[in-house]
Length: 130
Image (tube, rainbow, N blue to C red; front, top):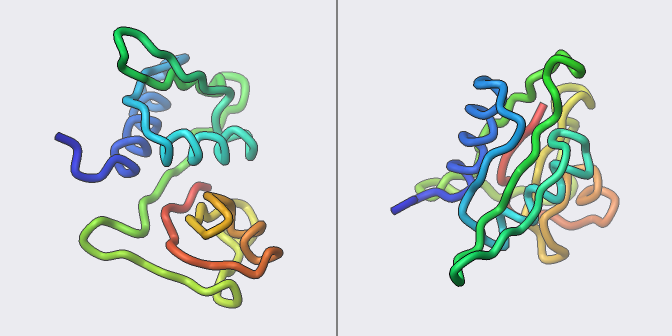
């Protein structure tokens, strides 16, 4: 049983990059799919695809080629199940002086910190990617 599915997703991405895997599979959840959508939009992963077999959904995540990009992203979980971190729109700062992104869960969906600041919404600060 996975207690923290977001932390598990970030750890699987980190481990797959370190092992130089091209793709890997994670169990499906809507929040994971939304986080992967943000990561794909910001080019931290190459692609993802939702697979369904025997009434079980999984997500196939395709990573960027590290040999080409020469870069392994750092994924850090901020808000944890035991300690949730909430932030208002005016308190959202740049991540690593603009070199990274914050992923925030808002009433408008899961978006980056830049989008949350421009939409003037805040909520739970999920993770930081740089």
